Length: 261
Image (cartoon, rainbow, N blue to C red; front, top):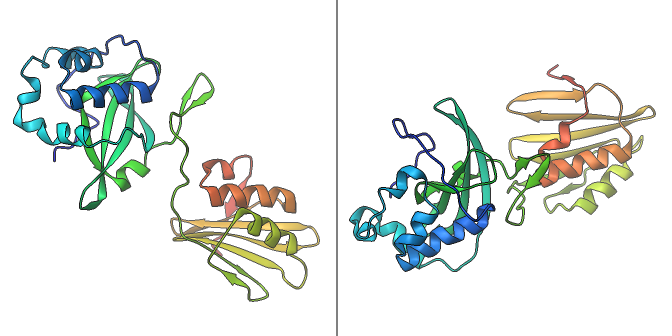
């Protein structure tokens, strides 16, 4: 299986005008073109460079038969869309990766449509448009792409899959976690049951009770940090819930200091 590289040395991408501004619509047209072997529809969604490579015999090329087959087996649903930004020939380029199908007998890789844009409004095929990538590569990309201050997404947001567990000072341990449970546990913190740990894979977030407020710490990438100021239970609940949901804004607005004692 060929993998479309995000940076193709020596190829200048000339983005063409398309009637569809939204990523999902363009991705579906690319898949339809491959499924129906529709040359004109594929050209419509191709970059300037690729337009000249798509001839009447394009779909007979033996090197793209796997991509054609993946489109033919597509069930019509878009699983998820992720984004990344890169520089190409001193120009910022936005790349969208659209997960449309699993790869049979390979749990680690997925089929995706690759699109690119220079203005976040007009999207065209990146390279030949269809390829594969690992789930790990896909999950490293951003869920949203900011467009004039408005977050743009064309699929239902999926929470990143983490393994969570909680532990409290009274010995209570749980491996089945909900947002309501997190809220209840923080509200239970007092002089006797004075700490809560929310474990997440190789890191954690924890909070300790005092009369002045809650001390909050987190650990990731082997380093531990602590909020400089005490926190109210209400604010701690908001932060813990964001951490649990995979919302990367949970650190925002807090001054963190090194807690590697």
